Image (tube, rainbow, N blue to C red; front, side, top):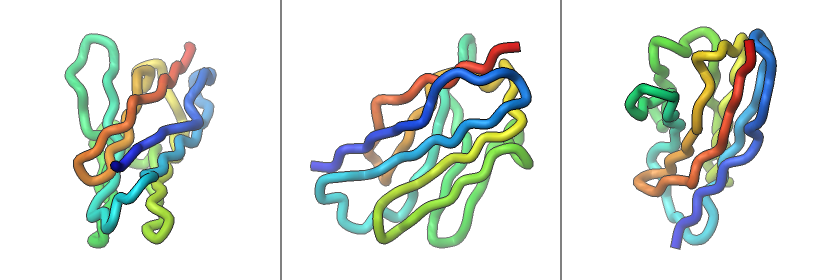
Length: 110
């Protein structure tokens, strides 16, 4: 059974940075992709970014500010978030393959 666990969320002032971490534990086998989604107030859940063997891709709203990196052999993925704005406030979810984490809160104050 695969378990996906996020960590590193919290509160930060606008312009600050946070780094989210995610691990897929259990017996995940080979994971072809890992990524991050977010649920921000009043908006549908959106893909923030994804990393595969072919590279990374990002939502337009975070390009240039967020960076995804991963350790495939350890089934870990990270999300470095810089220049955060209040619009980035929300619950961030890690997805490993088709398995979702429970989400972690990120709050950016103005």
